[in-house]
Figure 1 (spheres, helix red, strand yellow):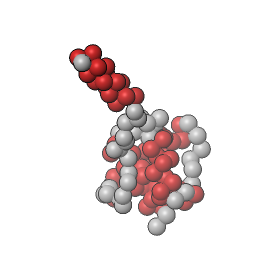
Figure 2 (figure 1 turned 180 degrees about the vertical axis):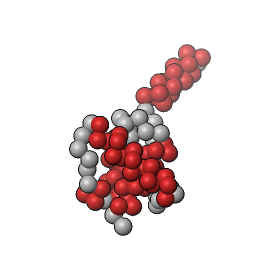
Figure 3 (figure 1 turned 60 degrees about the vertical axis):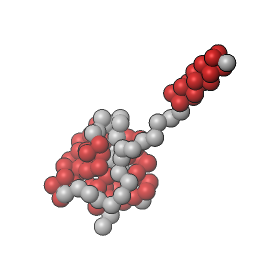
Figure 4 (figure 1 turned 90 degrees about the vertical axis):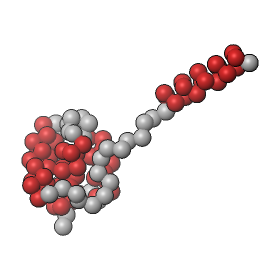
Length: 96
C-alpha cells in the first residue's frame, strides 16, 4: 500500500511539474498607466523593439492581438511587468 501511495504521489508531482505555468503577467485590461508612463512606454517601444526588427504600426493590430504579441515579445526584450504594461498602454493609446 505504501508503494502505491508513493507512486501516486510521485506521479502527481511529475505531472504538476510538467504542465505549463499560467501567465499572470501582461496587460489584460484598459490603460492603467499615467501619461508619463505611457510616454516612457513609447520610448521603450521605439528603443527596445527596434533593436531586433522594424517597428510595427500600432494601428495594424487590435488591442486583443497586441496582448498576444506583447506576451510573446516582452520576454525577448527583457521588459519588466511594468514596462510591458506601459508599452501596451502606449500602443493602445495610439489607436484613439
